[in-house]
Image 1 (cartoon, rainbow, N blue to C red):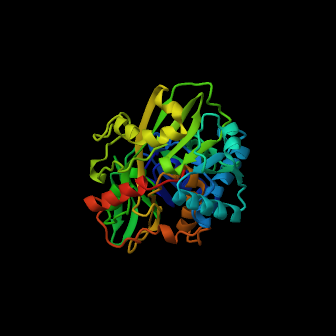
Image 2: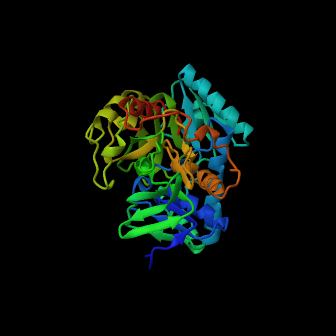
Image 3: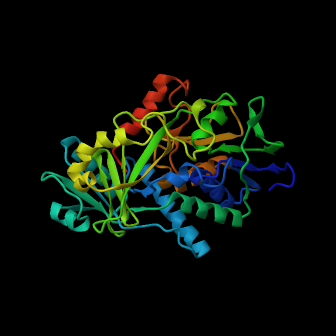
Length: 410
């Protein structure tokens, strides 16, 4: 807890996986005095609900490099702390049946190989030996990527935070940011209950609440809070912890082991979206008014999913988990500067890839905050790429929701 309202070189708003990754990288770069301000407890909101797939294969080389940075960060943190972050590295299987999806998978593999990611094409019997519960149509093509992994988002954020604090970063929990302080076109700090904290650079990494904070200074972040969801089955001997996770583009689904059960996510044809001003104060206990328990989405996706995962029709569903992801209309992130505003950066719009991209985002945003050229290409993620937008406009919200519905990768 702060003894007094001090001045910091950098204030990071949000102690989820993005905010902690940024603070960790700033501290590694000896950036000065760094403070993380968190409205709840560290990594207790959407970070703790993520499925945590660390898929290396992406549609661009730049995105692949950002995921590789996350793997590097995990290794680095484990070496520094001497503790495991619990990453499960048993690979992934991508399977495609429809011609359009097969073409996308072939291109995904081409880019992966170009970036020195190990890939092996499997026949159906080989895929079946790896994942016995998986049924594949005769004309399917399947790619195995042995280096892919998944990780608990809470553990990863905790790793970033622990090492950041070892390097001198301070954390202020249970403290909402009421306002961003601004003098002319310069953000000068934040207002919290009881006073103001000044800083030469404020980084908005507040997840789904990031847009509401930015609106306070007249900035419109091009993203919307969209429901993310998954189900966890009861235990079954067919599910093994060392099985690869599975990506099924035709079913708009992913599946990965969860203890002795199976965790699977489905992307419905029209994702549920919430206007920023209707966000809850806390995620705990929140239920989306539309399809509160996910049954409509499950029934919608079941016919196609059951072709690949026939057990789903008979196995007990033990848990249903829903939360928010932040989606942009084009499925790319919202990272960097806001035009005409100094001393302020935003990092949001992670489009369901916040855990996987956290290392790359953390490094790039820290470099940008320090006036350096980022190690990764942030141009596709620039805040102003859509021009003037209203984040509460119903058409804009729909575009963001459809970006999630149209996502077929992990």
